Length: 284
Image (cartoon, rainbow, N blue to C red):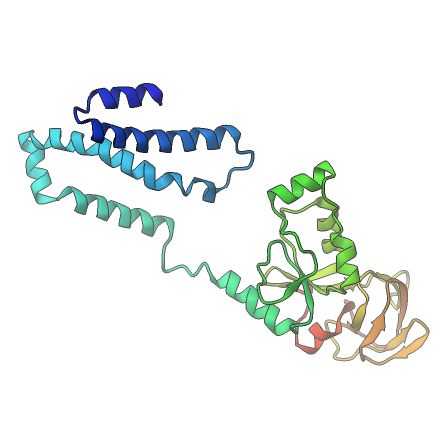
């Protein structure tokens, strides 16, 4: 970088122009080399300060080449038909269409997530998400789960109390991104059932012991639940020794027992508020 800057200054007769050019080149080069050398976790937005300076440098390098080409008779004819700015503009437009085609609604996934979250929860309900992508609901775990947070948790500099916060705040709605600590991922996968739109709701699938009527299940998130089935409207039976007829029941953390007297199959213990708002687990 220093050698290239020195050659550029030597080729520029005007002192002020040489100083300006060298300042831009050194700033862009120093930022890029320092970034890739010392910054531990690179992301796309880290390069944003570099791009404007890089385009200025590249433009300054390309213009002399174009001026030299313009002196060639055949190439000069081409430039008269297709001006250089127009050519670059067309190329940029084509690249933009290929990289980000406007006819594909890539925002639908996010809008569906927000729409489902708003329909599923009230303003006072807590939601677990990775970095606030549900936007309009309060998060049970304050730090965003990104590279620095995970590294601090791995080094023991930060306590990962995600599971305890979900239990203490009675968080019944969560998202399940892949990029999170393994213990948190397993907890969400085991205690929340998917409903689509990357959302999960507190619940558990019931697996029978012997006769298909007796079920033992564990609840981790204290909340009101309903027992639902795929093929019947109301599930009936005995829940923890008390008669159950499809109404919501508050379940505390721990092991519970349900004995079914109806004919439903594929039973699920599901957050009552989600059932009342017509959400069902996609695992059905």
